Length: 201
Image (cartoon, rainbow, N blue to C red; front, side):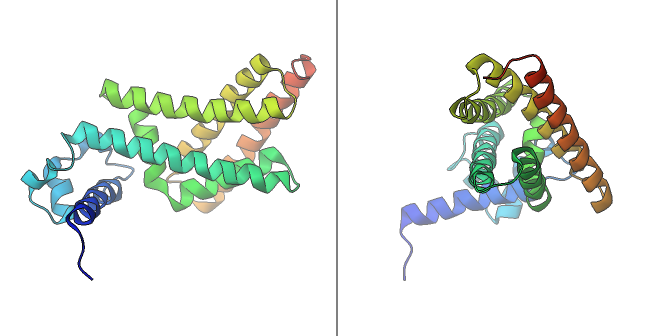
């Protein structure tokens, strides 16, 4: 079956995105990738790159957007899991850590570019983290939490989980377990502290 021109273009665009993501590592951030490297990995000529993206920054923005969306979708599934029973905190941390282990480069671009050299990419990561925080806040409000208290707690919890994910990226399995358990303990402290301050409804 023949592939339409628009489908072929979309396939090439996806290949570029996948190629860029695949080249990330503990020692290689998106900022250190060159257009030529991405083009070579995508099996296209460097000039063909510009048919799909204006420049590397635009590619980075698309990657951050897609990675943030993938992460939010995963946590939505986690919420459905703990609605069936079990600890909200434990289920969330386990789900998040599974995600970082199976998709390390998706998290790497969010982590690396959070403090990267490009202001547009830093802003994009901050926006994705904000989306993540607000979704958690909304969930907590539905469960009966005060709006302001829910946001403060959600923001602290997101910071803890993101830091744990970043630390676990290149850790050994036994270290990952230690990191996960520490994050669970810290999240419980946040929840218990909020409750003791009578911030929860």
